[in-house]
Amino acid sequence: MKYDIDHKSSVPLHIQAEKLLRRLITAEEYQNGKILPAEVELAKQLAISRTTLRQAINKLVIEGLLSRKKRIGTKVSKPSVSSKSNNWLSFSQEMKLRGIEIKNFELHVTWVLPDESVASFFDLKSGEEVLKMERVRGRPDEPFVYFASYFHPRIGLTGDEDFKRPLYELLESDYATIAALSKEEISAKAADSFIAGKLKVAVGNPILLRKRFVFDQQERPMEYNLGYYNGDSFVYSVESTR
Image 1 (tube, rainbow, N blue to C red):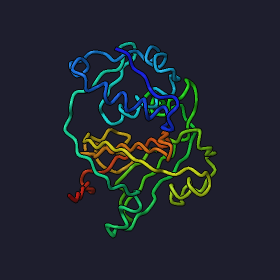
Image 2 (image 1 turned 45 degrees about the horizontal axis):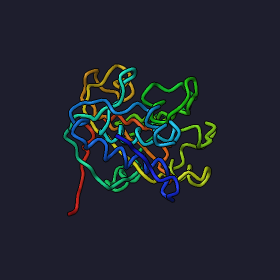
Image 3 (image 1 turned 180 degrees about the horizontal axis):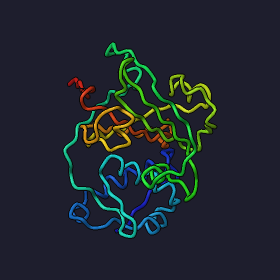
Image 4 (image 1 turned 90 degrees about the horizontal axis):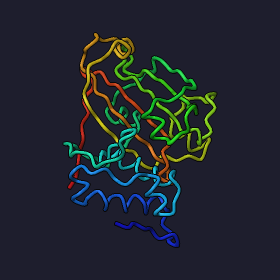
């Protein structure tokens, strides 16, 4: 089967590649578990770079439509139960709407080598470090969430910024980086010793894990955020209007 995209179109190549992949994964052969064409072969056929193609693939992986494994390849994911919401608020905005006063218990900023999931999301070269910001936040009398945020080196953060400022305002005003799109995954897990220590709960306590993948106006990945919420202190609700 031959695939192609329009190189004369004003539509960015990665968006065209994403649309092509969305059509491709609806084919019966791929729905039944067949591995998608290799990145090298497909990029060559489309006459685009592997980086451009991988940007499109990563977006579908984040949406849960594709899964990718080293030395195996990329394939269509099995359907899972999910709920989508088009309402996106920052943590501070969420808490303000709930009338909850927030205190910052910890704030740490370091440069780290990202794990595979973060490096894959940002499409980084091996050995390339990213800025990691860790925060423990909650009500004045108790912490209830631990955040770990990773930022793409492209943004230009140094680590010396005043991260007590609202994050997305800082990125927009100081680095002309606008958070335009957020995708989230929410799941339940038991607190390990590290999370239990941060949130002052017992090991094994129920925790809500909230992954947030943030993109800029060009749909480039800019932040990979993990939020671990104390299940006894936080309820995640979604309001939808038809």
